Image 1: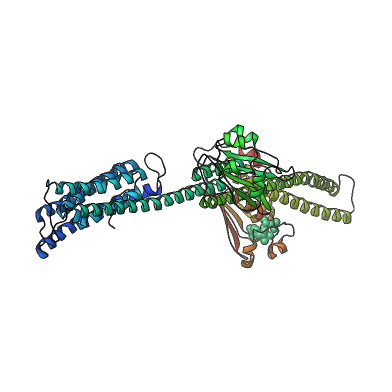
Image 2 (image 1 turned 180 degrees about the vertical axis):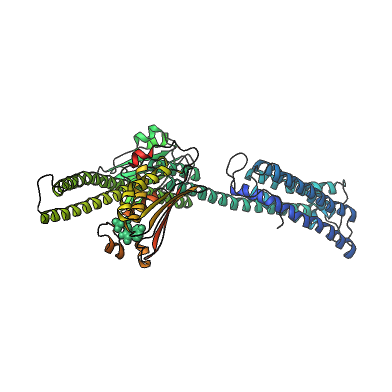
Amino acid sequence: MADTGAPEGKAPDAEGRRRTLAEQELVNSLGWLVAMRWIVGVGVLLATVVASRVLRLPIPEFALYGVGLFILAYNAGLRWWLGQLGRTLPDSTHACAVFARAQIGLDWLAITVLTALSGGIESPVIIFFLFHISIAALLLPHAHAFLYVALAPALVSLVVSLEYWGVIPHVALFGPPRYDQLTYVGTVLSFFTAACYMLAYFCVAISVRLRRREEEVGGLYEIVRDTTATLDLQTVLSRLVESATRVLDCKGAAIRLLDRERGQVAFVATYGLSEKYLEKVPQDFRRARLDQATMAGEPLFVNDTAEDPRIWNLDRVREEGIQSMLSVPLAGKQGPLGVLRAYGGEGHKFSEEDAAFLETVAAHGAVAIENAQAYRMLEELDREKSRFIRIATHELRSPIGVTESLLTALAGGYVGELAPQHIDVVNRALKRVQALKSLVNDLLDLASAKAQMKHSERRRVSLNGLVAEVCDRLQARAQEKGIALVCDVPAAPVDVMADPTDLDRLVVNLVGNGVKYTEAGAVHVTLSRETDQTRLVVADTGIGIPTECLPNLFQEFYRAKNAKALEEAGTGLGLAIVKDLVERYAGRIDVESREGVGTTFTVTLPLAAEGDLQTQDTAAVAG
Ligand code: ADP
């Protein structure tokens, strides 16, 4: 269909309220009706030509042309109005509803005149009323729809009466006129009225069901959104009971969870129930017979609380105004977790459809509860892990440190002269202890990066100073090996939001590897600033990485063969740590390498935003 200028889309309207499907359809169909009306207007003109010139029917030809032109004229006006509506009030559901009523009103006026001009009660045009009845019943609020339905027979009766009393002339299209035979008129009018009401009733019934489904889908959408948006179980369960109450249009809803150890069922989330009522409901599972029956598996209906012997506190229930209940089990993987119950007020009955909806809500509730339990267990494990790391940090690091200094003192001759063969043994032991120290340090770094044990405090850190400082620190080692370590850092600040210790660890590992795995040539460290990210490139002319090793490079403990041959000391943990850190800061790491030619690591990290906190003195941390 051509662009109608009709406001489209499922966005909330100008009043900030999300449109229902019916309202959305109303908005969408405005343009469609305008497009259809061009055809109707032209159709009236053509039908008049055919009827009067070809079929030679005795019709008021020029009056009918007038009606056709009138339809086209007001449709042009409506088209213009719709254009204005699209421009000025694109999101107002109210404005659209006014427009819809205006066009239905004009159409009915046109159909009524057409009916009068084409035979009144005998006219085939009256069938067109049914078309607008179905539109009104499907799209307008239901009370209005039935009003429109009443209008159709009223308008036809008006035409018939005016003809009967001779106020307007009767157009006899097909043989002898019958508009003055009361039985005929009465029969046609009653059938027409019955058809109008049956059609309206049918359409309203369908639209009620569709609106109900829409509410269910909307409610479920909100539930899914809430269950995934938060890990706070209480919030999730509260939303579940609220949504269930809204969609089922009942008095309230509640979730009761079973505590197997204590043999109790307790409310964990409620909506629409008074505190007084909640206090009086049994906690003891043995007395809660409704809960027992529900947890056996099937949805449980109580249509009249007064007649159900399983309700022992009937006074309270009646006082609360609860006449019906619908309970479904919250089924966990290892058995029932509790029940979800909806409460209906006076005259409220729950249906099978309600039960199906409530079961879906309960399934979400059960998942949320089990997720929360699993999350709590994970948190517990995490705490255990952190505790282990803290102990290991202390218990492993300190004796290794002490052993290293004792061996250094021994090798340096500070505790007495050693024979050369003893010095050799002590130096070998020292090397092993240092390797062990670096393994323990790497392991702890990795564990802390993974567990985020040390909650890294993010702040604005200048990478310029940090990178330059790391290069300075590694300069001595590069000189020892006779290679150049060139650091190229821009003058303009390159700031990122991070924990400076993490950044230091990241840069030291990459530049340290460059120096470690380069025998001749240079290591170039380049920092640059791009639109919204920073790029750190560490390129060396070292031993390179064999192509087949590249896929495993960031795995823990992985070391390429050529690296092992060149440098015995190494843990294979540095790059795993770097990758974890880069990912933690939403960055990216890439590597390019050719064996025997050199390696280039490129890390990109998001830049700190304008409003982020002040730059900290990173030199102190890095040092
Ligand atoms: P380590 O250096 O302790 O072995 P890393 O995790 O830092 O552990 O590095 C893993 C492996 O990646 C190294 O063993 C080496 O094979 C390879 N590698 C890393 N950086 C380089 C580099 N600049 N040049 C050549 N190989 C490298």
